[in-house]
Image 1: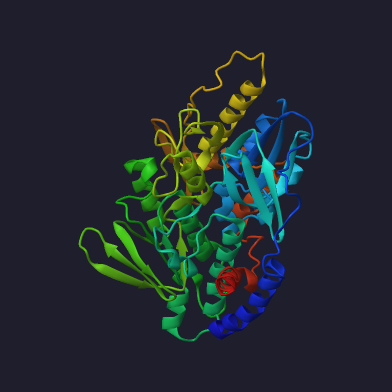
Image 2: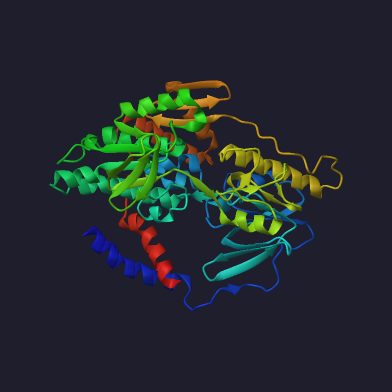
Length: 480
């Protein structure tokens, strides 16, 4: 019935998408033939991407003698480290995705553009952005590319149909719908085998995102939903965490990795390491045991991918024009000051850059954005004696990951700790980075409610959340 319904809805969504996208072929209209720049003669900085790197670049330039255009395909700034809590109903989407325009309402030297960047021309110093059937080209004096990353399936993009990642707000809402729908469908079947399939959750990737998401699904099954269904107990859910690496949380070291693994296993999670996934389809995940070469197939209704990331394709576009290399993940080799090749006015930061083996962490993007802003401000300040090519030096503030309720792992340089103190440290740090007093209070209230009660206030789901992504992809394929 679900498949028939999905096929029926495909035709409906196809019509809607085609109508909303391009009513007439070739209808993208440029608002002007001349590249746009703000009035006046001030230095114009174009920033592509409103994530941690882009937003901090813009904010750091608030008092600089520049005009800024910030372009982002989203109209919100996403606090990605807490996205898994949206996917599991602990907090609402708005608490981690404040409006970018409202965040910048008190900064007079910035204009925000909600659009998807489709072209960057380094020679002409232009950036083109599109939103549906509208397009505009912007000229720049300095360009900061901070477009972030997306989920990587390591060349197996067809896996995405059955195993969504978790990099965007849409991804989190889709996952929440898939997870809760699995429990709901299990209530409707009398077939033990089908119920077991529906209650099997397979998470691929044992990095921080995979571990945090796995822990929350276990808590949903063992605590939140344990007595709300009348025909079965949710504690019967089977949860698998797979990774091709030999340990959980590789960046945290072996000791913390083992602790995280033991904690998950106490919650009933089946952790399988040295497990290289070779196939994902509607019904199952197949992996190869790297030690024995044995192939194992796990059947399960809900598959989630958190095994890798790929930089925005804009990085490759810039790299090709600048004559520099981009690695297999699309990260661009940059100079020590994060400029690209011989283009001293073009910077790539955050997840998109390859520099000194820096990890794709929020702090790398934040500090990189602030550093680039300082360099640009130095360039436009004729009286400044600072070095406008000062190399970027990253200060490692450590890494944290929540494993389960009251339990997290923390690595701060050579200092490592876990358990309840780690959990408190994670909460305190992440609460300070949530933007806006209202959002902080809302997050705090939701966390307190989850501590004091088994209920979660954000478990609502819709059919559209669950099926829209694949239907839109099908519509786009038919259109092309």
